[in-house]
Structures are given as structure tokens and as C-alpha cells.
Picture 1 (cartoon, helix red, strand yellow):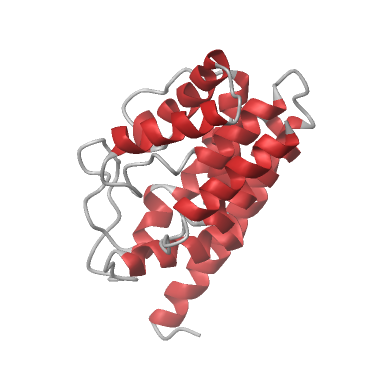
Picture 2 (tube, rainbow, N blue to C red):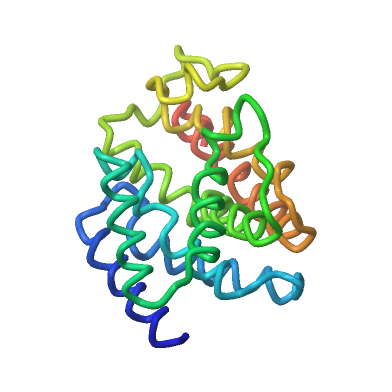
Length: 214
């Protein structure tokens, strides 16, 4: 199975080679590593399904590709070519289809234990020091404004307003500071709590410097 995983990893590396908004292959590698760490505490979960879902979760994401269905068919063909059975493919796609933040705004989706682990691993990479960097990368790639004190954070994100433009700093208040409370596993909650403090300290420093207080 290791050879199959390595081949699929190379496929993902190629597919995301031009991605520079914080969802590139480096992000995928960190999500896989996070997922492995969490799985060590959740041994009942199937590691192969976790790794494959973590590797592939952004390859068919609407943020990355223009034709999600075409990308999905391509991924399915790659999995089939490398001997991944239909039932495991279904488990992988079920995770990818239900794990994203946007899919869980209006109603929390039901995920397998494997899915909960991959979701936690992905969300951990959205916070902390790396999360700060990725947030500014995404904002820059989408012509975002770093900070404007006249634009207040939205009190609540909805499916309708989630993709509407805001500022990078507002994104911390609207989403990132809240992610620790959404973690499924204890180990992820512990890591997320520490990473959230890193972000809170950064944003406080950023705003203080912006306002000329420091």
C-alpha cells in the first residue's frame, strides 16, 4: 500500500503545483502529518483511508478547481488505477464531501471517525503561526484587504455570506478564533487551544502597531 500512497501523493503534488493561495502541496503534507499524529491517539481509525482523504481533500475543492465533478472523476480514476477498492473510495469521498468549513456552516455534517480526524487535521493547519501565514497568502491571492478599522467583523458567518469579501484580520474574528471549539478529538482540541493563543497575540500586536500604539 505504501507504493500506492506514494503514487497518489505524486499525483496530488502535480495537481497543486500552481496553487499559491495557502492550499498547495505543503499544506497537504502538514494535514497528513497532523492526521497521523491524531490517529496515534485514535487507533480504531483506518490510517490508509485517513492518509488518502488528507492527500486528496483539496484536489476536488471548489476553491481550487473550476469543474468539481471533472476533478472528482479524475481522482476516482487515479484511485482505481492504484488498486483502491470501491468501498474505500466511497469512504474517502464521503470525508472530502462533508469535512469543509463551508459545508458545516448551516448544519454540522456527520463524519466517520476517519473523517473527524482529517477534518481536525485540516483545521489545525488553518490556525497558529502557519494559519497566520496562510490567511495572508489567501487574502493576497484574492485581492483582499489586510485590515480596515472601518470594516467590522461579521457577527455570524452563513453559507450565503461566507465567500463575500472581508479583511484578513476580520477573518481571525469571524472564523479562526472559533475553530478550536469545533475540533472532534481531544488531542486536536489541546493543540488548537495553544495555536489560538498564538493568533490572538499576533492580532493584538498587529492592531496595536497599526494604530501607532507600539
